[in-house]
Image (tube, rainbow, N blue to C red; front, top):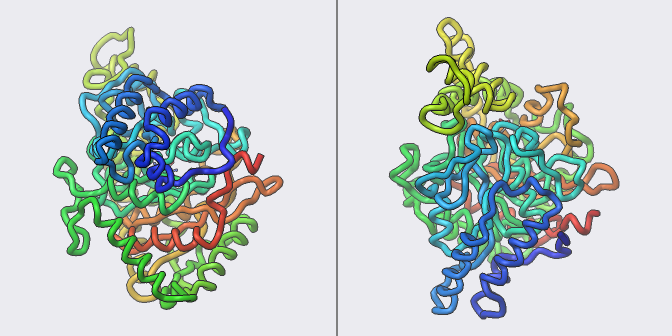
Length: 508
Ligand code: GLN
């Protein structure tokens, strides 16, 4: 596969499609070919040419009739955690190796109704548990900027597919950083919206109180129509919100807020961001942060300051405790969510067993990978009689306190928070095989937004590693429901910098 030297934007490709300079079918055919001849054979877990072509033909029919929207004909792909009627859905687990869902996830349905053309299902960490895509049962993935390195996880396939130029957008899920961290490692933009704004219906559950669907693309401008289309109230998800601070949670909300902020910035002359207070948490810059990441984030902050923003030092004192809290709460929820994979209701059943209990035991031990089994054991332990108070309840208290810190900072000191996404650049594949905790520590800056349910995004802001080839991400965390402003700020940054335009081809 030839990597692109330039990424088209959704707006420019959409225009070419509407003007019929290119057809959705041509685009899809090229993309399928590139995906097949892709540098990374493990990237897609299921491709089906007929399904993709059928979507492309439907998009072409709309385009022909002049009925197209901003996403009609745009090639995308889905993390294999979103269930799809057409393509298999495996969650990158042997447990679901042959599973085909009888329905589409709400996100998949909405994107399809908007005319996107899906190339298929992208690999991820098994049941979204992991930070490097090495926990997929179907093969570890490569970072398109350096095949020796991880693309990040758990939405590593989504980030890699966008970075490689195969698709213009890819869905992901983020329970502890799984959209933002791979976006940072692969040099793409990714957003996790406020908890409850995007439906979880049809997203295979990992840790339900933390899971949130998000999306990755080349730029903030491209994220806007994608996230806007995906979001909105859904009665099939009991945690889905009907309204966001008095505004109906419906498609159009995020795009309208984004456009209003962009308009406000454009009216403000040479200091478009005047009055914006950026909170910079001192705990995000402590030991453990690579100097090159600190430098890149610092340079990005200076760009925002030059645009008129004011930088405010803030403190999120419980930052370190987010890790133990998350790694108690998430496994606890996972142990309960994954109980349904018992060889009876869903998925793999062991071929040889003695009785029902033995069948369940064997099915689960044979089909679930080591990280998933570990988390189920941890989760069962922290929920068990005698330990519940000491671990699970304690973790919930810490979660409340972390939330109070973020809330106080965003209420009193600043409008948004900025910092690094990860402590370093993408590590080498296999590097943490002997140290299971090392990856968990790498989640330190991303977990807070999930524990508190805040919207957060990652955009490229520099490069580091050997020969400065590896992308570095800037994280922007906002108040609840402030996705529109986050995207407008990211957009503003990207109009003044070109980190988001570096393709892997330029770095190789
Ligand atoms: N890296 C984190 C973990 O391993 C986050 C996963 C996620 O957001 N799904 O759990």
